[in-house]
Image (cartoon, rainbow, N blue to C red; front, side, top):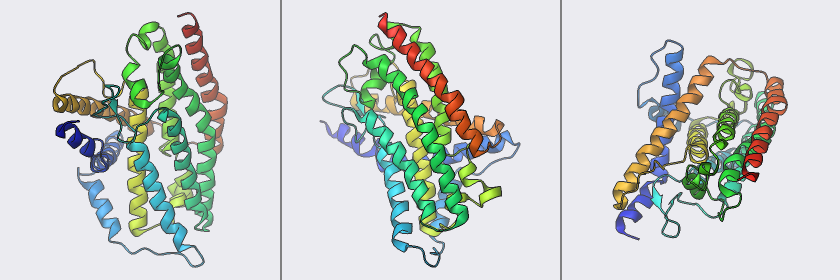
Length: 338
């Protein structure tokens, strides 16, 4: 491996790059949301100012609440988000496969991704429960209910690109492999009608990921007008800053996951021998695709008002799950005839 490839591996996708992108995503989301409400929105560096300001504030632990858990859980939450983000293939070449791979990629990591997403939701639940605040506990219970309801549709939606790339093929079911093969002859090229199932799964994944991130209209766990910020209500100072940064890194992770599985990741059909130039091209196109996904989520949350937790659960089980199963069945049916 050359020194250029080592440099790329350290910086892209490195933690520094992920944090910068997380802050940019925060700004972009707030800017689009503000413009949709005819407001100007925050300045470019406002997300960074917010994190710095929060770290300087005093942290108060409620009486009778475990200081250990109120400290450990935000750290675990941040670490989980970073772990998931480091698995997204952006611009690092793998000597073994020739594909772009994430910093912590490994064979069959697509299945580990589901564990990371579930852990992300469970940590939110525990962060609210340990505070012993009724508002926080109500919010965390709503969050867990919402995560469990959308986890099954999420699994089925991710199954569509896995089937397209994996059925009848010798593949290791890693994110890097799926992203690389999705729009090739061994993927969509086997039957162009598969694009229908992929588009349906992509649309479902956008909705499900908005629920995972608790964005409008799925923000009932943190409803400001009802629960005073829900499961976050008792956190302050650097703990709150770590949680907010973890949420933004989670947005990068989830957006990058959608880009990888449904939009081909950093691939654009261009191959350049120079590893630095190829890595730069990968980085640029991955970032552009990620911006498009985040912008779409932000636009949707601008035009849709909040729904109640019972409506959210009903949407997951009665509408989204059947549609997702239909997309999987369509994919299998088309692949059988290949």
